[in-house]
Length: 187
Image 1 (tube, one colour):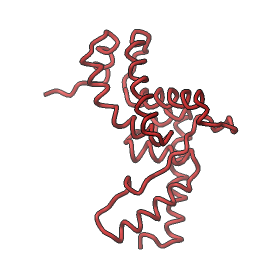
Image 2 (tube, helix red, strand yellow; image 1 turned 180 degrees about the vertical axis):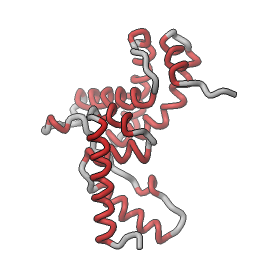
Image 3 (tube, helix red, strand yellow; image 1 turned 120 degrees about the horizontal axis):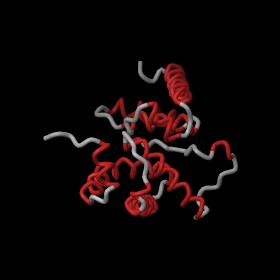
């Protein structure tokens, strides 16, 4: 069976095809749910906003632009949608407006699970190191390594240029490597 392309699903959605909407929802709900939890840390709010977000997409489908890749569009749009709701609910207080587009993602030990007890110890240390990274670096790491997005897609989601994403990921990995070597964590 042939894999349905993003362009085909998007075009069918824009034309009101409920099957295309169902494919979109089922394909991206789990990833967006995990991302939403990273942003707001509230299961009920994440689920409510995600349902509202998909409903909004369907209701406004005729106004959607043509896109080649759905994932970056959905991550970017959902992040904005969720942050707008959080601000409206006064649950997210922004004092630094330059950092408004960055969310403080927290990594959990479960996301880094391994089989051996010694590696669990290393993962707890790695978890702590990841959570000590600056917000921007944590979000880039999450989108790259936990959501499997490309740097160009991350640039769109974080509303920064491609080179900034590459630099941010490089700095994050450099910081992690330095801390790991100091702790002799993986030796």
